[in-house]
Image (cartoon, rainbow, N blue to C red; front, side, top):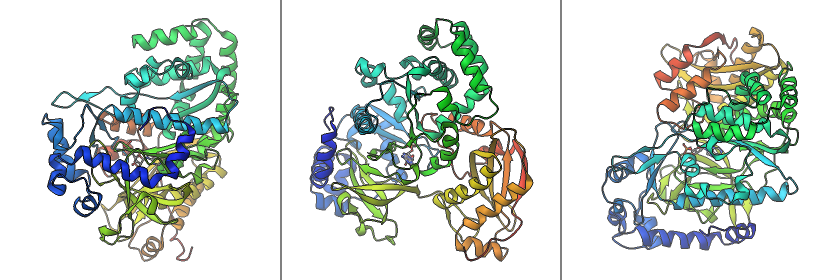
Length: 569
Ligand code: AMP
């Protein structure tokens, strides 16, 4: 993949997707066919037909022994014909356990290229916006494999790379935060300093963002609890003493060194208002849009970000995972609910397994052969040595950009709730939640975060939802409203759920309201287990007893649905 991409290239590569995918597979097979892994299936051939016929579709558990051997110091050619210089660690919060994937520096270049393409697409829509970006990015210290190779989350690897460090100075001055703030290993100091830099340069900020919406919501929540201290720093031109990371401290001190009481007064005036409606546009009046991923499970944060931003455009731009990047949204101004991602055909070789394949693996199709409206799980083959690897996401084809398909993110495959034989998917839960959010909003309440689990410890089993709620003014839990939310959730679940609930095989759905800050503690729990803040996603369903204990310790009140949902809905 060339490192200088122009928008024209997106036109070219999407027009020529089939050829590009074929050439890429050829390149990958030529490089990797003599690895120990592929030799078993291809016997040294790089023939596409043989690849399709012989190489099995796999999940992480199938290739884990090979990956671990390389991590433990065996030669790379167990899995890869090229260099392996590092491992990417998945967040483990969207699909269960953390996984590690072997890569080399090309992966950083691929990320850089996708971000460059994203900027080009955005500049078509927001061309005359000269100014800065306030983005909440973080890293997590790397660990190493027994063989001494670094292991880190994808974004940590990107931000710590020479590619990022040596980017042109023009793009360095784009961010309100200096690199040292992103690179600070303590995420709390980093978050505080991101806000301090963003507030002190408020007149220049034209874009506010984060990778995932969760980080942005968390940042605003943190601001709500810490604005007085931030204002005092701006007033005095002095960074709080608890910012002890030296690089971070000195780089931020330069930015706020001139005491600015007028600015501090102005920020205080906005933040001390009872309602935080429109706080983003009030504090950063030149902000034109908000950029962060808001699809899939991040969709739960759409209402709260609309509230904070006075309905600025919310732009979901990229779709990817630790295994590979997939693509980007070429229509950034569409509604966040309507986002589709156009796959970029020169990143990895993409195949698609129909969701209803009934075990018939021959129904798998190439990128250009997917059918409009159909549902698929992507399967990837990467240059770094993943072969026909099932990603575990479900996507729907929504259209084509030139010859390249566009996909709506539907859900994670293995995220389901079930207490009986019913299957309630992540998508079902998110749809139900959107309905319940309406009820909450009409009472001036906002859902800050949620998760759920199927409690089968007693009969009948029932769904338990943990909700952290915030008020647009003073929090008052109205029993009637929360009981109504329980019913609304049940009403929007599938027919099997409603039937079983009606016959008493499923018990009344329960909402447990938890204290403010509980979901922060949950995040800290996952981060302490190796997750990264930048890629953190609150799991939609939780099974781990330790994680459930974090929630249980903070339950304030419980509410149950009081009626069975109607059978026809
Ligand atoms: P990880 O590799 O741990 O960072 O997680 C990758 C997973 O995050 C993907 O497989 C998706 O389930 C989810 N994800 C990443 N990007 C998006 C997106 N744009 N929309 C929805 N889900 C996403």
